Length: 142
Image (cartoon, rainbow, N blue to C red; front, side, top):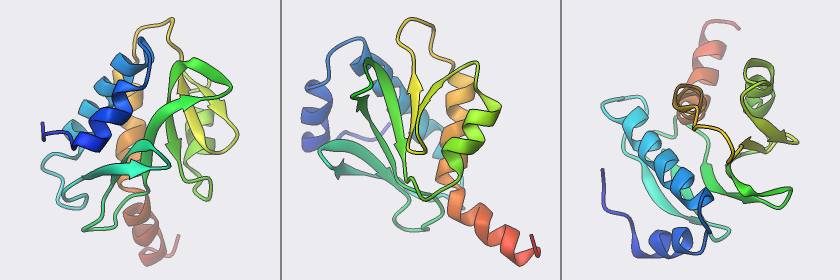
């Protein structure tokens, strides 16, 4: 697990528990799911809009992932994705009984249930490979 940049650590420190604990575990899952994946490459950890953000800056294989809390569900952890992608809609169709969703921009992970690590990992891998998957679809005529 890479060291956390100081500014990112400060952002996490501002998030109340239990959301902070969930978000920190999701951070671990981002790095675990990208480890050894050449198409993803190294993960850049920074802040965007004051929230921890994860980018595939070298390969540009994925869309930015931000971690935080939604105004509509302040006790829950949220994974924010670019609203121009189809990811949240895809996850809504696949995981309607696991997560809640905020429009086409966020996956909300309820605080009152165990963290569904397999489902979260699936969503993270899809986000980290989003642009690469689109390129492959275009290459294959899809």
